[in-house]
Amino acid sequence: MTPTHINYPARSHRPLARLALATATCGLMLVAGEVALRLFAPMHLVGFPRAYEFDAELGVRAKPGVHALRTTDHQQELRVNRLGTVNFQEDFSGYRARLFALGDSYTQGTGLPADAVYPFQLDLLLNRDAAGRYERRVAVINLGLAANGGEQSLLILRRFIEKLGRPDVVLYLGAENDGSDDAMFLRGDRHRHLVDGSPRWGATLPLARWAAETEIGKRLRVAVKRPPTSSVPAGVRSGPSVAEQQRSVFERLKVQCRATNTTLVVGWAAAPSHSYDWLKSWAASNSVAFADWWPAVESTRASIPELPLHNPHSGGHLRPWVNRVIAEEFARQLEPQLSPTINSNSRGSTP
Image 1 (cartoon, rainbow, N blue to C red):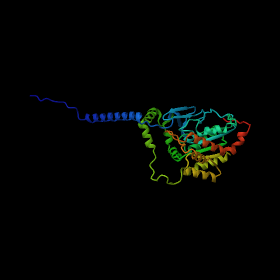
Image 2 (image 1 turned 45 degrees about the vertical axis):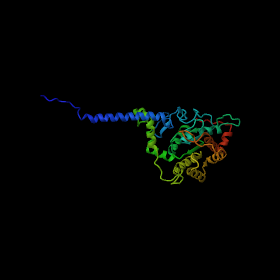
Image 3 (image 1 turned 60 degrees about the vertical axis):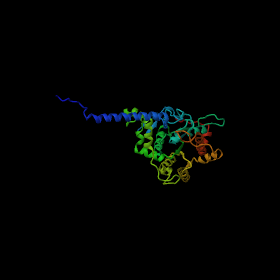
Image 4 (image 1 turned 60 degrees about the horizontal axis):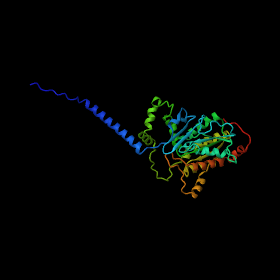
């Protein structure tokens, strides 16, 4: 009797089948996780990736002419004119004086409507007459950009002096992340952002941007960027403040402004803080004006204790009323220098 032969699947196919099954299972789990996160725990990140473009020197810059609006748990707004500054004005012709406002997201206006940020409020303070009518006196040119450190601000200052001419006034509002932002810039991290025109990403940019904007991708980005946990107890000072670490930036700003007879006013966005106190002391010892806005905020909150400082949404940053106070303090510091310009009947021409 002839034996019956049974053909069994080759064993070599089993590992491939298992791999395919495992891959499909992982894919389904990722899809299910993404859907669940979108429905029940969406993460809101600030910024407009499509509103920026690659810059060989700075890494990133805002696109000239963009007016971006994005609604998450609040409405984000970024308005950039054709010159590349964060202003509603398309040009600054007819103003008698020119003021450059340098800084990061606190100057650009992250978390705020574009007309609530301190440079715009300062514009209204300096350019309205006794009857409240707007008159072109001082061009308040907002050169702030989110995630800028001091080194980038110095480069931006040089660039816009070449483009628009020497300013009469330079304002610089520092922040607690300036040191880490400088480190990222000097490492080249800013040149690797997912922005239009990036030579690093090229044709893969749409796919990389899509992956980064998924809920899972957002969490991975936050995890990668999260700084290491400090072993120093809260409230205990360890090492020099961020402002003190930025001493070189302030010194170079001071030297450059004095060489061109430009008024310099510095300030710090985080208060009360060691950085705020250090910069105030540095400014006093170097005969540089300091925007000391915190006492005005303290006195206001002493009368209105429930008045919050920060925005109650993912954008964070200071509320509009605090930006108004900061603008008023900058204006107070500038009054001796700009009073002749504001009260003059002559008109110059600013690009």
